[in-house]
Image (cartoon, rainbow, N blue to C red; front, side, top):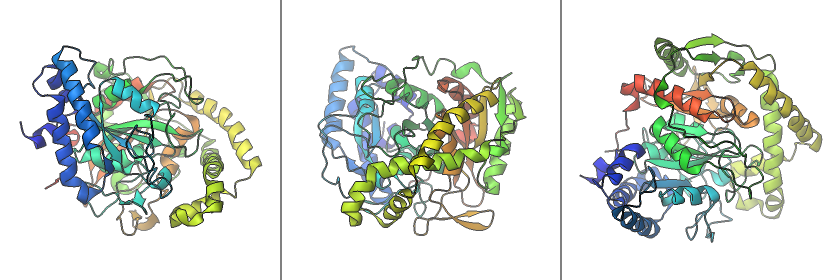
Length: 473
């Protein structure tokens, strides 16, 4: 089997082949390293590739599996890791000039967990500087590019993770999400991406952005793979103050149950941004697919929707400034221009604004939960526009030019603010530019499995969308 053929398999498929000893972890890892070496000069999806570490881990996995010690479906699977997540003895730059030579002495908890499940850390994916910009146009390590059209952005800040998965450099990757930074790249690159329940995956060993909004999440090419990767990441971490002690279930168990009889909600009030027409049309088509599968879809009102994003921005800015304010005061030129501007603006958030937002968030979270009582999920477009050109980062939304950077947060930030899971699933590509679009599925806290069930049902009903891949010739 050729390297390019191996790279096209999903996590689930590779796991079955490795367990059956049809292929070895060494073959799988070498194939993906070859794919990275071939495509990374064009896409810049990885800042650091851990060739030696990955091959050493692959050999260990091969020996274990030969001895009959199979840890599970992730055993021998190479995974990319966003470069703000610590990895032992592998450079972790935070996408910044300040940490260009930073080599942690231990793995972040999420990396430790997937390695314990047998997965292999293959390299560090490009990120926006300090994960604080949504195009992954990094001023220190170069812009990451979209595999569907390398002249366009992959979104961000987990753009390298989204680009790497879409380009089959890895079958799965870790990103982080503070306002949409997993789901944005998933939507823009045509992959599946999950922002789980707040605290579902430990953030210990992850560089903070806005601590009460930060999440780690998986990006994969199928919903099933996303559930498998979450299985290897989730779990309570008593050393992480933001970790949630949630019941740990089999996230794949209910995938085949379908959506017949499910009640799903749509809420136009929560779409706090204009949606480009091709994306709106694809969303409507996705709703029809789900209705055809037996789902009941109803419109719900959210009279308090206009409170959410202002309070989210207050929390995001105050917590971001707490992380960066002192360093910026000492060395502003160490930051890129955009980040300098953001830090200056973030300083304007007063203590009163921050405390008001924290207090109001408790009530708003409960109000959204009450709004969704009786529903299995909330559906919305995955991103408001198509990928913007790298050079300008100006997106076109219904004929109007808008700055792509930050545009998606008004659509995806609500899930960070209230801590609910959000799953992005591809809805195909637009007719004019052949660029990916997506649907977002939001479920109640702790119900990632419910989102996977809905997403998988839609995915299985639309194989012509699920199986599309960019032309990487």
